[in-house]
Length: 199
Image (spheres, rainbow, N blue to C red):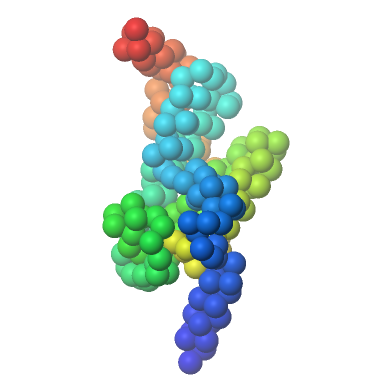
């Protein structure tokens, strides 16, 4: 059967680039860093902090991206629990294996691809190119560390890019529906409360 052959090749090539002997491999910290850097909670915190300190078009991009990350996470989770493809066997990434045992598509690949394509579509070319490089490293790291197959990250990239196009197309509607999220004044008020909390 064609699908079985594709899945066999997918597993074979995914294993071929996977880090062997992770406890002694000096490349592991680099791969682990990028594998974790695409975590949704880390991204949302970073976006919120940047949103507090920015204004104008970049401020709007950050708010739009934060919302897109949350919506995309729900969609990817729904697809994962529909397809139910198990992650590759392994010990690294216990938090992913315990809370999210399904691997197709890769949420990390989808997330980083969405962010890169959305930045490009909204006119932030330099940022978008930088995020594309990050997307490649995160996607490969997920396979290097053995929590995804190559097809998981490839599908994630395509899904994330498609979702970015949808978010860019709907951005005027979001600006109209939720103007306070995109308002510079809102982030200034939030920053003041945040500063008082820290003090």
